[in-house]
Length: 358
Image 1 (spheres, rainbow, N blue to C red):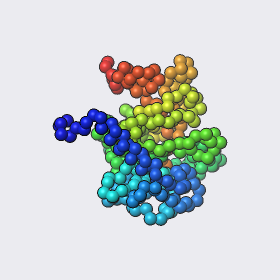
Image 2 (image 1 turned 90 degrees about the horizontal axis):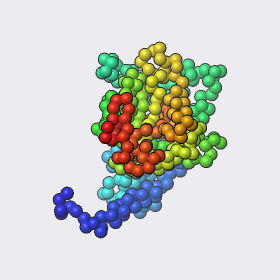
Image 3 (image 1 turned 135 degrees about the vertical axis):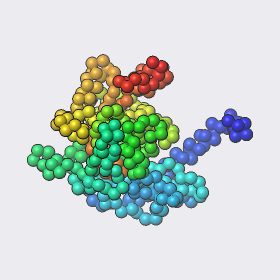
Image 4 (image 1 turned 180 degrees about the vertical axis):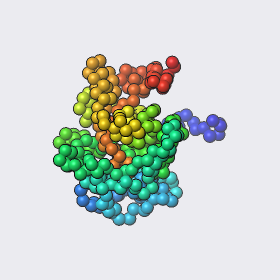
């Protein structure tokens, strides 16, 4: 670093701390009523700030609000369908602080979700299979209409937590178009909310919102399935360096011994055997239970293993299916449970070394 651009060491930490406090203060000064969650009828969302001279900018399409793209908040926002509201403060000519997100879900409307919502990807080239994968966003009508066997759809959609991902739709499409690629170049910024329905089993849980990075996840399953898995990364490029929340608090098994801080987690689509597998014969055994059963059994047997919990997933308010939120057993995972630093550990999978010296 050039000498002229360096700060005296005695001031560097103080200035950094002041900048952190300014950002945190700005985010804390924004109040949103009602807060994120589930609704049945139209709502009027009010946003306020205690920051003098601040302008509130917002978007409703998943993209981060900016001076060029954001709408200026002047009156309560009417919301009648599942919507991700993103908000930032603008003070003078300063760049907006990181946005906050409040997702409002109307699960009664999921049964009528459009097969091709405007602006979202509906086909992707699977070059390794020399074919096109086509898919739609509508729910299976056989499931929606079969209330005799399946019961009321909205009851099931409120029987598990919901993970709400929010991001620019073109960035989301880009990930799908490059679903075989990995690494920082194919990571995109997103908001991650954990929403709990108003049910007795979730009464003690608060949920949260955090800005993070999003990548595609998986090997062969990512190529051969239309319902794809994701990896969430908590890093300072997007927000806090870690997620500090008891993420698996609602899990049926092993929640009390789960880690409380996370560098990354996986949203598993169950790709090895689910309805979206390109090989039709593999559609039937879509139980989603094999991997969680093995992991829970491992923890029961030896006290160590990756925790998981089932959750519904939405993308910018659009329903995206049932997922299994799970820990990623890498070097950071080992350090979280066994102590030390991630550099002390070696992790690998069937493709070879993931981290560490082999």
